[in-house]
Length: 74
Image 1 (cartoon, rainbow, N blue to C red):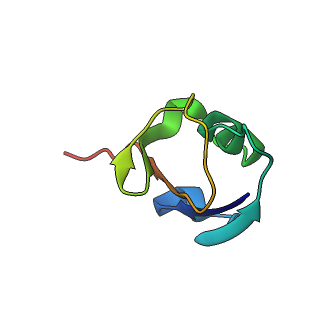
Image 2: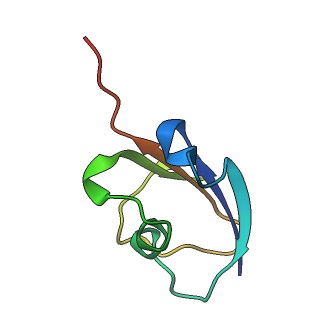
């Protein structure tokens, strides 16, 4: 199945901004995070098709997964 992955802020460093991937059916958001080498503790927001999601959610054909880091400030 084809899925679009969008990374934001420092998650783009040494990776990509947007990438289309062919994935096996049953692939979860957590699988993608792990393959990309993103520390789960650094994730602030996960979205599929502009809706909040979790690491356990399975991706579907033509989904758009967006991964945002925790944002700090003061």
